[in-house]
Image (tube, rainbow over all chains, first blue to last red):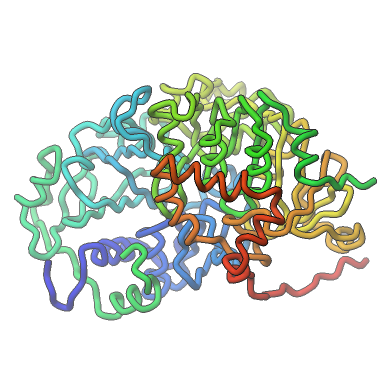
Length: 254
Length: 301
């Protein structure tokens, strides 16, 4: 990986995700890298980004990196606390969420995500945590951003279980089923950034020093690609400084 | 009328073998004290329901209390998998465990339907997900007004709900601040409600701030006074979440012998929560919350 100005693939992922967020948007935040991306955006170009956590914190301004989705630091100085019934019925199903962040153990070319089981449901090879709020975030957020390190195992041709629907079988399958949100619009990995065209992932930018061959080696299918493939914008020094010194000083997620 | 009981008496009187039990609290206000007493009293064949089983249900499952788990996200929040839960699901250790799985929204709607004594509630989720394929309790209904097809989940009406709060009076009127989770719905859905409180206060304290009340005492069967009753979960304004405990649990949970030893020392090895708190000593006091008070409001007219 490039050493100028010195950043890790994880830091690049967080910065790329942060740049997808616009000032004034309402974002449903997940723990880990999405949390860092949202707080980085809030501290840089999007000071009016409104952070909502599924635990019920609305307008959270955590002064420490939350270890869990229900960290007490999300409550202190937030603008409001909603019950989980309000969060899911009024905020999410009510169409108030602009952006949802999702991660997954497996993702396919249509952005469908698996966080339930590897192998057969009844006799799993690995039992994963399950949906949590991911299924409804995938359905209702106006757009979905996915952050996931890329490997052949985690980006297979077929996923073992669809926990959270992306673009289903591609094309306009999502709209035909009447899902309110637009679904995944970006997948940000440690190698590249993908957009979507006709409901299918399309390679948009490669991170510095990453080749198409390298991307192909860690993907279960041959990806479509934009004609003008560009290099992913690298983190700025102020972003790196914020991440390392203020947002995740103990390197919990970086 | 005082409903104040010790945890031992409350669990002995209101939790029976084979019942459906809910200890709610989303990360915040999880009554570990109640879970540990259920383990000590060797309750069996319970159906345990919670959005996030967390460490408390993992401990109860590892101790052999449960025959079934109803949930929506089963991990060690911020620290990896729940290995003992996995052993139960994948290998039937210490006994087979039936699972019934929803999303968070699905579980929330189940409690809400239960609280309202409706047989089900419609909700917009599950479309395009495989969850309905593996859980036949997730169904569909045609809207009689629009003809639209909506997902449904059945009401969840537990026998017992155990709710931890910051403060309660002796009649069970209780108040909570910070994350609210799904406790109000779970309590109203249940046949019996046990309230566990950090502080027992006079009724006048509750009446001075009625908007903060979570549950009225008339739906509460028992009140238990249990300071530090949530550790390693937290109580806003009282003590912080013990994140180090959750991280360290990863190792305990991986090894059945270590887990059994932990239960032996910290659950079976203490008589009650007060002994647990004394034994934890400075490990707890370092978690004490700093003070950040809100401005009072005027309830006058």
